[in-house]
Each structure stands twice: as C-alpha cells, then as structure tokens.
Image (tube, rainbow, N blue to C red):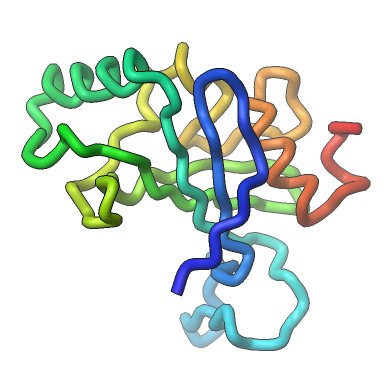
Amino acid sequence: MWNWKHFFEDEHISVFCDLDQIIDTLADEDGLYASPDCYRPLPTRFGVFISIVLKKKEDIARYLEERKKRSLPLTGYKSYKYSLCLAEMDIPLMTCRVLPAGDYDVNDKELGEASIITEAMAALLPGISDEWKPIRSKQSHPMVRRLAKKFFPKDTGDR
C-alpha cells in the first residue's frame, strides 16, 4: 500500500515520495536485500519510490511526443497522470540517481514503462538523471536536494 507524501513542487512538476517503502539497494554477503519492514538503521545506499506529476498540458504533450519519436507505446496515454520512479541515494558519496519505473493513468493503472528521465526531457527536468550525480551540486534539481534533506537535513548543502 502506497503512502504518498508531497515534498516538492515547482512550475512544471509536483513530486511525492513514499517514506514507508524505503528499500536497501545493496545486497548483503548472502545476496539478500533488507526488507523495508526490518527495523534497521537507514542503509548507506537506499531507494525511495517517488511519483513525478507533470503539471502543464504542454509538458505532458512534450513527453508523449518524445515517446512517439522513440517508437514507445502510447496506448492509454490520453489519460496519463504520473511517472513512478525509484530515487536511489548513496550517502557516503552523497550522490543520487532516479530510475524510471512505470507510467500511470488517472486510475492508477500502469500504462507502460516510464521514459521520463531521458536527455530529451532534460530541459523539463534539469538535474534529474538516471546516472549517479552529486546531491550537493548546483546542477542537481532542487527536488533531489529536497528529497535528500528529508533523510539527512544537515548533509545536503541545501540550507
């Protein structure tokens, strides 16, 4: 069950995260991953699910046009609402990457694999990347710094 909390908004996007679904993204010596239900300290590298909502119709149209250019399916995308992503943070390195997972419609039905984090969408989502990037960098999107601040308020350089 998702427990979405709003944590960032600008003129183009609203972003929500599920603080109940924090996952360990590094396997232990046995190749196992800690469950989010384990009562353990926050892992040094972890992921949290976020949903990115495009607020403007022209931004949604641009996203759909990009999908079309890349020959990605558009079935059901007339009711596209948001993209689910996994924001992964490496705390010792203070880096973050955002991995797209799926696109959803207004009824929370999965439409297909998300492609919102691409170079073509960089102007719309500058500083959000599927590559590891520094959290503290001025080039990082304010959403990335705000998300890190939820977990480590003194370490993000965003005061």
